[in-house]
Image (cartoon, rainbow, N blue to C red; front, side, top):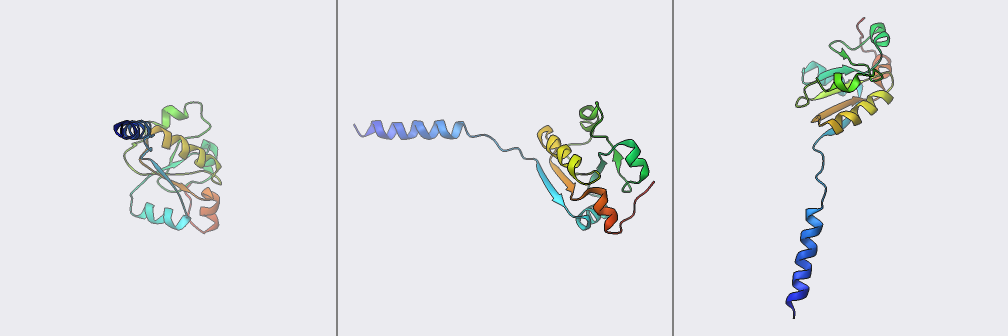
Amino acid sequence: MKIIPFLLVIFTTIIVFSCKQVDNPSTVELITVEEMDSLLQMEKVQLIDVRTPDEFAEGHIEGAINIDFRNKNFEELIIKVDKTKPVAVYCGTGRRSGKCSAYMKKAGFTKIYDLNGGITEWKYKGKEVKK
């Protein structure tokens, strides 16, 4: 009769581990201006500015492409970015890029960097913007 408790333990273990949720391999890392600058110098990331086209025209980080987070076609546009390569996103202060990063994580992007403080912090630290 000792076999019944043993089988119960085995059965419970199988149930617990088969129901375990698989973690999403995507990661989002909040980075500083200095870390962003290093990534850009190494040309290791796809740079995306998620502000509006008007904000982008006022000044953006060199090499950035503009995909407006508030655009009704945002999901269609962002999905065209290569999910297998690291992506760095920024906005004005970090709010929109944070939401964009969360969406990109759910969409399966493998590595996402989010500029802490956005372009406001970038300019505050004396970094150049292109018009």
